[in-house]
Length: 340
Ligand code: ADP
Ligand code: MG
Image (cartoon, rainbow, N blue to C red; front, side, top):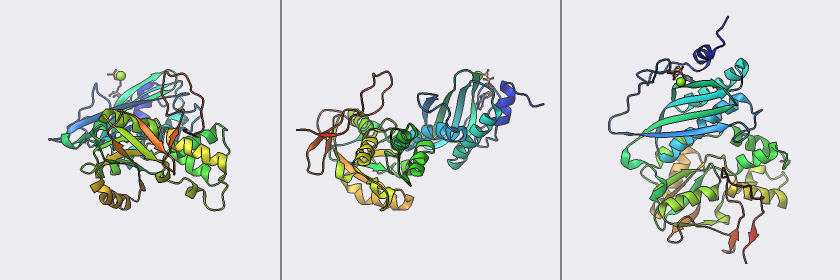
Protein backbone atom coordinates (compact mmCIF):
# COMPACT_ATOMS: atom_id res chain seq x y z
CA UNK A 1 0.00 0.00 0.00
CA UNK A 2 1.19 3.50 -0.80
CA UNK A 3 2.64 5.48 2.09
CA UNK A 4 0.04 8.12 2.98
CA UNK A 5 2.38 9.89 5.45
CA UNK A 6 4.14 13.15 4.85
CA UNK A 7 7.13 11.65 3.06
CA UNK A 8 5.00 9.38 0.87
CA UNK A 9 2.92 12.37 -0.19
CA UNK A 10 5.99 14.45 -0.97
CA UNK A 11 7.54 11.64 -2.98
CA UNK A 12 4.35 10.94 -4.90
CA UNK A 13 3.06 14.42 -5.63
CA UNK A 14 5.88 16.89 -5.30
CA UNK A 15 9.05 15.18 -6.44
CA UNK A 16 9.91 15.57 -10.10
CA UNK A 17 13.26 15.65 -11.88
CA UNK A 18 15.11 18.95 -11.40
CA UNK A 19 17.83 19.03 -14.07
CA UNK A 20 18.48 22.75 -13.53
CA UNK A 21 19.38 22.24 -9.84
CA UNK A 22 22.52 20.66 -8.45
CA UNK A 23 20.23 19.01 -5.87
CA UNK A 24 16.42 19.03 -5.72
CA UNK A 25 13.91 17.80 -3.09
CA UNK A 26 14.90 15.14 -0.55
CA UNK A 27 17.87 16.50 1.38
CA UNK A 28 18.09 19.19 4.05
CA UNK A 29 18.44 21.86 1.40
CA UNK A 30 18.29 22.17 -2.35
CA UNK A 31 21.53 23.24 -4.03
CA UNK A 32 21.24 25.82 -6.79
CA UNK A 33 23.90 27.28 -9.03
CA UNK A 34 23.15 30.87 -10.03
CA UNK A 35 24.30 32.11 -13.44
CA UNK A 36 27.54 34.10 -13.04
CA UNK A 37 26.96 37.85 -13.29
CA UNK A 38 23.28 37.68 -12.37
CA UNK A 39 21.59 38.39 -9.08
CA UNK A 40 18.78 36.32 -7.57
CA UNK A 41 15.27 37.80 -7.49
CA UNK A 42 13.40 36.14 -4.61
CA UNK A 43 9.70 36.46 -3.80
CA UNK A 44 7.19 34.72 -1.51
CA UNK A 45 3.41 34.76 -1.61
CA UNK A 46 1.00 32.95 0.65
CA UNK A 47 -2.50 31.87 -0.36
CA UNK A 48 -4.80 31.32 2.62
CA UNK A 49 -8.15 29.54 2.24
CA UNK A 50 -11.02 31.94 2.90
CA UNK A 51 -8.79 34.99 2.40
CA UNK A 52 -7.21 34.55 -1.03
CA UNK A 53 -9.44 31.86 -2.44
CA UNK A 54 -12.76 30.19 -1.71
CA UNK A 55 -12.14 26.93 0.19
CA UNK A 56 -13.98 24.86 -2.45
CA UNK A 57 -11.82 26.22 -5.31
CA UNK A 58 -10.95 23.57 -7.87
CA UNK A 59 -7.58 22.18 -6.64
CA UNK A 60 -6.04 21.99 -10.12
CA UNK A 61 -6.69 25.70 -10.70
CA UNK A 62 -5.46 26.48 -7.20
CA UNK A 63 -2.22 24.64 -7.98
CA UNK A 64 -1.76 26.76 -11.08
CA UNK A 65 -2.61 29.98 -9.32
CA UNK A 66 -0.44 29.45 -6.22
CA UNK A 67 2.58 29.31 -8.51
CA UNK A 68 1.39 31.88 -11.06
CA UNK A 69 1.01 34.68 -8.50
CA UNK A 70 4.65 34.23 -7.49
CA UNK A 71 5.94 34.08 -11.05
CA UNK A 72 4.03 37.30 -11.63
CA UNK A 73 6.27 39.04 -9.08
CA UNK A 74 9.35 37.80 -10.94
CA UNK A 75 7.80 39.09 -14.18
CA UNK A 76 7.22 42.51 -12.62
CA UNK A 77 10.93 42.65 -11.75
CA UNK A 78 11.94 41.65 -15.27
CA UNK A 79 13.54 38.47 -13.91
CA UNK A 80 13.88 35.06 -15.58
CA UNK A 81 12.07 32.45 -13.46
CA UNK A 82 14.28 29.48 -12.40
CA UNK A 83 13.33 27.64 -9.21
CA UNK A 84 10.47 27.45 -6.69
CA UNK A 85 9.76 25.97 -3.28
CA UNK A 86 6.30 25.06 -1.97
CA UNK A 87 5.22 25.04 1.67
CA UNK A 88 1.73 23.73 2.28
CA UNK A 89 -0.49 23.20 5.31
CA UNK A 90 -3.18 20.68 4.41
CA UNK A 91 -6.23 19.83 6.52
CA UNK A 92 -6.10 16.17 5.35
CA UNK A 93 -4.06 13.89 3.11
CA UNK A 94 -6.78 13.93 0.46
CA UNK A 95 -4.99 12.19 -2.39
CA UNK A 96 -7.44 13.15 -5.13
CA UNK A 97 -7.14 16.79 -4.05
CA UNK A 98 -3.33 16.58 -3.91
CA UNK A 99 -3.08 14.90 -7.31
CA UNK A 100 -5.21 17.64 -8.89
CA UNK A 101 -3.31 20.40 -7.08
CA UNK A 102 0.04 18.96 -8.22
CA UNK A 103 -1.27 18.69 -11.80
CA UNK A 104 -2.10 22.40 -11.87
CA UNK A 105 1.10 23.39 -10.08
CA UNK A 106 3.39 21.44 -12.43
CA UNK A 107 1.44 22.56 -15.52
CA UNK A 108 2.25 26.15 -14.53
CA UNK A 109 5.86 25.22 -13.69
CA UNK A 110 6.41 23.51 -17.05
CA UNK A 111 4.71 26.32 -18.97
CA UNK A 112 7.16 28.80 -17.46
CA UNK A 113 10.36 26.76 -17.25
CA UNK A 114 10.69 26.54 -13.46
CA UNK A 115 11.51 23.54 -11.26
CA UNK A 116 10.20 22.69 -7.78
CA UNK A 117 13.34 22.16 -5.69
CA UNK A 118 11.98 21.81 -2.15
CA UNK A 119 9.36 22.78 0.36
CA UNK A 120 7.58 21.81 3.53
CA UNK A 121 4.42 19.78 4.07
CA UNK A 122 2.42 19.90 7.29
CA UNK A 123 -1.08 19.29 8.63
CA UNK A 124 -3.14 22.39 9.36
CA UNK A 125 -5.70 24.82 7.96
CA UNK A 126 -5.33 25.00 4.17
CA UNK A 127 -2.54 27.43 3.36
CA UNK A 128 -0.13 27.43 0.44
CA UNK A 129 3.10 29.35 0.37
CA UNK A 130 5.38 29.46 -2.64
CA UNK A 131 8.81 31.04 -2.87
CA UNK A 132 10.07 31.74 -6.38
CA UNK A 133 13.66 32.43 -7.37
CA UNK A 134 14.59 34.14 -10.58
CA UNK A 135 17.68 35.71 -12.07
CA UNK A 136 18.45 39.09 -13.56
CA UNK A 137 21.37 41.33 -14.42
CA UNK A 138 21.64 43.68 -11.43
CA UNK A 139 21.19 46.89 -13.43
CA UNK A 140 18.22 45.59 -15.43
CA UNK A 141 15.77 44.89 -12.59
CA UNK A 142 12.51 46.82 -13.00
CA UNK A 143 12.11 48.43 -9.59
CA UNK A 144 8.97 50.24 -8.48
CA UNK A 145 11.10 53.27 -7.73
CA UNK A 146 12.44 53.96 -11.23
CA UNK A 147 9.61 56.03 -12.74
CA UNK A 148 10.55 59.48 -14.07
CA UNK A 149 8.60 62.69 -14.61
CA UNK A 150 6.89 62.59 -18.01
CA UNK A 151 6.91 58.77 -18.24
CA UNK A 152 3.87 57.21 -19.83
CA UNK A 153 1.97 54.67 -17.70
CA UNK A 154 1.11 51.38 -19.40
CA UNK A 155 -0.90 48.32 -18.44
CA UNK A 156 -1.09 44.87 -20.06
CA UNK A 157 -4.12 42.74 -20.88
CA UNK A 158 -7.56 43.46 -19.42
CA UNK A 159 -7.33 44.21 -15.70
CA UNK A 160 -10.69 43.89 -13.95
CA UNK A 161 -11.77 40.56 -15.36
CA UNK A 162 -10.64 38.62 -12.29
CA UNK A 163 -12.63 40.84 -9.91
CA UNK A 164 -15.67 40.56 -12.19
CA UNK A 165 -15.26 36.78 -12.06
CA UNK A 166 -15.15 36.87 -8.26
CA UNK A 167 -18.29 39.07 -8.13
CA UNK A 168 -19.98 36.52 -10.38
CA UNK A 169 -18.92 33.57 -8.18
CA UNK A 170 -20.14 35.41 -5.08
CA UNK A 171 -23.52 36.09 -6.71
CA UNK A 172 -23.06 39.88 -6.61
CA UNK A 173 -23.67 40.02 -10.35
CA UNK A 174 -24.98 37.61 -12.91
CA UNK A 175 -22.71 38.08 -15.89
CA UNK A 176 -24.21 37.48 -19.33
CA UNK A 177 -22.41 35.17 -21.79
CA UNK A 178 -19.57 35.13 -22.78
CA UNK A 179 -18.25 36.99 -19.73
CA UNK A 180 -18.30 34.17 -17.14
CA UNK A 181 -15.79 32.03 -19.08
CA UNK A 182 -13.40 34.96 -19.68
CA UNK A 183 -13.65 36.30 -16.16
CA UNK A 184 -13.30 32.95 -14.40
CA UNK A 185 -10.26 32.11 -16.53
CA UNK A 186 -8.69 35.43 -15.49
CA UNK A 187 -9.51 34.75 -11.82
CA UNK A 188 -8.48 31.10 -11.65
CA UNK A 189 -5.77 30.79 -14.27
CA UNK A 190 -3.79 34.04 -14.33
CA UNK A 191 -0.93 34.16 -16.86
CA UNK A 192 2.26 35.51 -15.32
CA UNK A 193 3.63 38.06 -17.79
CA UNK A 194 7.22 36.78 -17.76
CA UNK A 195 7.79 37.35 -21.48
CA UNK A 196 6.57 40.92 -21.15
CA UNK A 197 8.77 41.57 -18.11
CA UNK A 198 11.78 40.28 -20.02
CA UNK A 199 10.96 42.40 -23.09
CA UNK A 200 10.67 45.50 -20.90
CA UNK A 201 14.13 45.15 -19.30
CA UNK A 202 15.84 47.83 -21.31
CA UNK A 203 12.63 49.69 -22.16
CA UNK A 204 10.64 50.41 -18.97
CA UNK A 205 11.75 52.57 -16.03
CA UNK A 206 9.55 50.94 -13.37
CA UNK A 207 7.06 48.08 -13.10
CA UNK A 208 4.65 46.40 -10.67
CA UNK A 209 2.19 43.56 -11.08
CA UNK A 210 -1.47 44.27 -10.34
CA UNK A 211 -2.43 42.19 -7.33
CA UNK A 212 -4.21 44.74 -5.13
CA UNK A 213 -5.98 46.76 -7.84
CA UNK A 214 -4.82 49.10 -10.60
CA UNK A 215 -5.20 52.37 -8.65
CA UNK A 216 -3.63 50.92 -5.51
CA UNK A 217 -0.69 49.40 -7.36
CA UNK A 218 -0.12 52.51 -9.47
CA UNK A 219 -0.13 54.39 -6.14
CA UNK A 220 2.55 52.02 -4.76
CA UNK A 221 4.73 52.56 -7.82
CA UNK A 222 4.22 56.33 -7.72
CA UNK A 223 5.05 56.53 -4.01
CA UNK A 224 8.20 54.45 -4.44
CA UNK A 225 9.26 56.78 -7.27
CA UNK A 226 8.44 59.94 -5.30
CA UNK A 227 5.99 61.04 -8.02
CA UNK A 228 2.28 61.52 -8.69
CA UNK A 229 0.35 59.78 -11.47
CA UNK A 230 -2.57 60.69 -13.69
CA UNK A 231 -4.82 58.10 -15.27
CA UNK A 232 -7.27 58.82 -18.11
CA UNK A 233 -10.52 56.84 -18.08
CA UNK A 234 -10.89 57.11 -21.87
CA UNK A 235 -7.55 55.36 -22.37
CA UNK A 236 -8.44 52.27 -20.31
CA UNK A 237 -9.02 49.02 -22.17
CA UNK A 238 -12.67 48.75 -23.13
CA UNK A 239 -14.08 45.67 -21.44
CA UNK A 240 -17.26 46.10 -23.44
CA UNK A 241 -15.60 44.74 -26.59
CA UNK A 242 -15.17 41.41 -24.87
CA UNK A 243 -18.90 41.05 -24.37
CA UNK A 244 -19.56 40.96 -28.11
CA UNK A 245 -22.04 43.21 -29.85
CA UNK A 246 -25.13 41.19 -28.91
CA UNK A 247 -24.46 40.89 -25.16
CA UNK A 248 -26.06 42.96 -22.43
CA UNK A 249 -23.86 45.85 -21.26
CA UNK A 250 -26.16 48.10 -19.27
CA UNK A 251 -25.25 50.95 -16.91
CA UNK A 252 -25.00 48.65 -13.85
CA UNK A 253 -22.63 46.27 -15.55
CA UNK A 254 -20.63 49.16 -16.97
CA UNK A 255 -20.22 50.68 -13.51
CA UNK A 256 -19.20 47.36 -11.94
CA UNK A 257 -16.75 46.66 -14.78
CA UNK A 258 -15.08 50.06 -14.27
CA UNK A 259 -14.90 49.56 -10.52
CA UNK A 260 -13.33 46.12 -11.01
CA UNK A 261 -10.92 47.53 -13.55
CA UNK A 262 -9.69 50.28 -11.23
CA UNK A 263 -9.91 48.65 -7.82
CA UNK A 264 -10.25 44.89 -8.30
CA UNK A 265 -7.15 42.84 -7.63
CA UNK A 266 -5.93 39.41 -8.65
CA UNK A 267 -5.32 40.11 -12.33
CA UNK A 268 -1.53 39.85 -12.29
CA UNK A 269 -1.19 42.06 -15.32
CA UNK A 270 1.87 44.31 -15.41
CA UNK A 271 1.69 48.05 -14.90
CA UNK A 272 4.83 49.89 -16.00
CA UNK A 273 6.18 53.29 -16.92
CA UNK A 274 8.49 54.23 -19.78
CA UNK A 275 9.76 57.36 -21.48
CA UNK A 276 7.55 58.73 -24.27
CA UNK A 277 10.32 57.94 -26.72
CA UNK A 278 9.66 54.22 -26.09
CA UNK A 279 6.01 54.44 -27.17
CA UNK A 280 6.51 52.82 -30.57
CA UNK A 281 8.87 50.17 -29.20
CA UNK A 282 6.21 49.20 -26.66
CA UNK A 283 3.60 48.94 -29.41
CA UNK A 284 6.00 46.57 -31.21
CA UNK A 285 6.41 44.47 -28.06
CA UNK A 286 2.60 44.20 -27.83
CA UNK A 287 2.48 42.90 -31.40
CA UNK A 288 5.40 40.50 -30.86
CA UNK A 289 3.85 39.03 -27.72
CA UNK A 290 0.27 39.20 -29.03
CA UNK A 291 -0.63 40.88 -25.75
CA UNK A 292 -2.51 44.20 -25.74
CA UNK A 293 -0.61 47.00 -23.99
CA UNK A 294 -2.48 50.19 -23.15
CA UNK A 295 -1.03 53.61 -22.50
CA UNK A 296 -3.34 54.83 -19.73
CA UNK A 297 -1.67 57.86 -18.15
CA UNK A 298 1.50 59.61 -17.15
CA UNK A 299 3.81 60.36 -14.22
CA UNK A 300 4.36 63.86 -12.92
CA UNK A 301 5.94 65.81 -10.08
CA UNK A 302 3.45 66.06 -7.19
CA UNK A 303 2.48 64.44 -3.90
CA UNK A 304 4.30 61.09 -3.90
CA UNK A 305 1.78 58.28 -4.42
CA UNK A 306 -1.13 60.54 -5.41
CA UNK A 307 -3.14 59.10 -8.29
CA UNK A 308 -5.56 61.36 -10.12
CA UNK A 309 -8.22 59.83 -12.36
CA UNK A 310 -9.65 62.02 -15.13
CA UNK A 311 -12.99 61.45 -16.84
CA UNK A 312 -13.43 61.86 -20.62
CA UNK A 313 -13.93 65.63 -20.13
CA UNK A 314 -10.68 65.90 -18.17
CA UNK A 315 -12.51 66.31 -14.82
CA UNK A 316 -11.15 64.49 -11.73
CA UNK A 317 -13.15 61.45 -10.57
CA UNK A 318 -13.08 60.15 -6.97
CA UNK A 319 -13.16 56.53 -5.85
CA UNK A 320 -13.75 55.42 -2.30
CA UNK A 321 -12.15 52.01 -2.54
CA UNK A 322 -8.70 51.85 -4.05
CA UNK A 323 -7.71 48.27 -3.50
CA UNK A 324 -7.44 45.44 -1.07
CA UNK A 325 -5.49 45.82 2.14
CA UNK A 326 -5.24 43.24 4.90
CA UNK A 327 -5.83 44.35 8.52
CA UNK A 328 -7.99 47.25 7.33
CA UNK A 329 -11.67 47.61 8.22
CA UNK A 330 -13.82 47.03 5.15
CA UNK A 331 -14.76 50.18 3.29
CA UNK A 332 -18.12 49.82 1.55
CA UNK A 333 -17.86 49.52 -2.21
CA UNK A 334 -18.79 52.78 -3.81
CA UNK A 335 -19.52 53.61 -7.36
CA UNK A 336 -17.41 56.36 -8.91
CA UNK A 337 -18.91 59.85 -8.73
CA UNK A 338 -17.89 63.11 -10.32
CA UNK A 339 -15.78 65.32 -8.09
CA UNK A 340 -17.19 68.84 -8.00
P1 ADP B 1 13.43 19.10 7.02
O1 ADP B 1 12.87 18.37 8.20
O2 ADP B 1 14.90 18.95 6.84
O3 ADP B 1 12.92 20.49 6.91
P2 ADP B 1 11.32 18.00 5.51
O4 ADP B 1 11.02 16.72 6.18
O5 ADP B 1 10.46 19.18 5.81
O6 ADP B 1 12.85 18.33 5.74
O7 ADP B 1 11.29 17.76 3.95
C1 ADP B 1 12.00 16.69 3.38
C2 ADP B 1 12.39 17.05 1.97
O8 ADP B 1 11.20 17.16 1.18
C3 ADP B 1 13.11 18.39 1.86
O9 ADP B 1 14.11 18.26 0.87
C4 ADP B 1 12.03 19.33 1.40
O10 ADP B 1 12.56 20.38 0.60
C5 ADP B 1 11.13 18.42 0.56
N1 ADP B 1 9.72 18.84 0.57
C6 ADP B 1 8.87 18.89 1.61
N2 ADP B 1 7.65 19.30 1.23
C7 ADP B 1 7.73 19.55 -0.10
C8 ADP B 1 6.83 20.02 -1.07
N3 ADP B 1 5.55 20.31 -0.78
N4 ADP B 1 7.28 20.14 -2.34
C9 ADP B 1 8.56 19.85 -2.65
N5 ADP B 1 9.46 19.40 -1.79
C10 ADP B 1 9.06 19.25 -0.51
MG1 MG C 1 10.86 21.04 6.70
